[in-house]
Image (cartoon, rainbow, N blue to C red; front, side, top):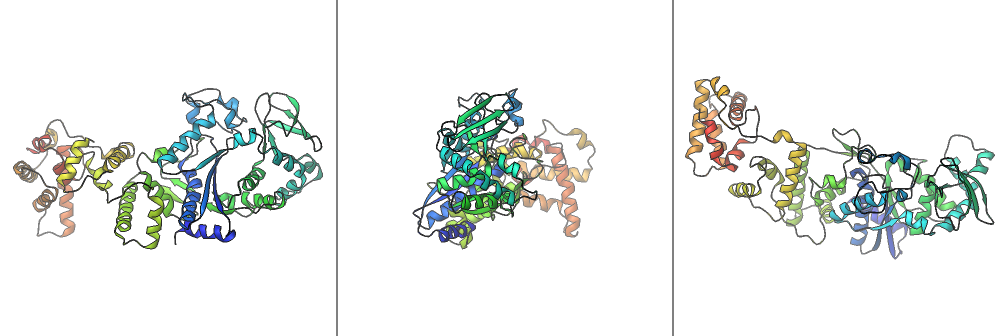
Length: 524
């Protein structure tokens, strides 16, 4: 059984007769949303799909926490505009958009960026913008209610802390952040609250403004995180929501918010699933504020949408794993293709069938695809020329499937960005200096290869591969000894062709390339 089905069963078991189940995700538009945060939406999305597969109605929501405070200027923003540190403490929705894209705010830019990626990934989700909910007054009565029960909330919060509670702090505790009406910053101190009139007096340490407002009319007040979260569980009647593994630790955010949900809002908290962190090989940080940020859009430059979905569906949510920017990408394509073939021909086991039910996008037709490994091997050989690549693929008696163009685009980006060492350029003329140092025996081997290639009307990959090994191998030597000879001659071939000790797979290179471009380089 796939983990999404297991979680879906738990959701149903908790409330078997519910008409519509709600799966929720939450994200802050602090900057470009990184791919690690995609797990926050992938987990409830797959659970929602599993619930629908079981015949249940599901509402799948993404809450944008765009009424949170701006904490730090991301590096990519600081590179294009100055002065954004002045907006630290303001809500994201009230910060100007640093990009010239016509969107009304900082939040709107990064929200659209992420939502566009979700569409590319075939994910449909109902977006709720918390800034609009708060500033419309939707939560005003909940804010009043929380202020009235602020001392009980304080007691719950302190029960999870090691320091002792005291009456003075309890008396001064207010479970809200107030954004100043003058400067929009949350550098405010609540001085008093009148439960009868709902009047709240605050002082702003940033600009010095002091003001008394009516909480039922002043909508720039936000509940603190561990109160805001359970309040929204009640408002949206959430059944399932994941979060980072840190939230699920004993005494963590989920435990605290669950008690507040039950004891303050009289609501049963949703089923929670902690998820593990993603790592990046060779990347020290991927947080949106650091400038080193791999986004879903960035990942889609080298992975197809189905493979991104497959990667997030194949691992248990709590499992941590790494993104590697090396041949692991090629291996992922190969593993995906193997699973897809089993799925299509009916030989897949139950887990693989469930996995591909989740990762394939509804409305698309699928078939066994042209190998990404083959495309990525041949593309640099033909200098990423599309028509030459299609011709080379056909010479290998392989199909160019309908979505091979998409894979060609991904392979081109992958190699040029992450594997530039695979870019080999043929020499413009013979490597005379290298030839001068060659022995006659070595030259004779090269001449045999030259004459063979020159005689072929069409170079076939398997045939030229066999010819090379037959030519350089000595049947009287051991396998290990012959491997050393092979390495020696391949190094010679590469130096004559590219001026380097390494290069592409030669049999593919000779078969895919126009021999008129390289034959004279082997004429020693």
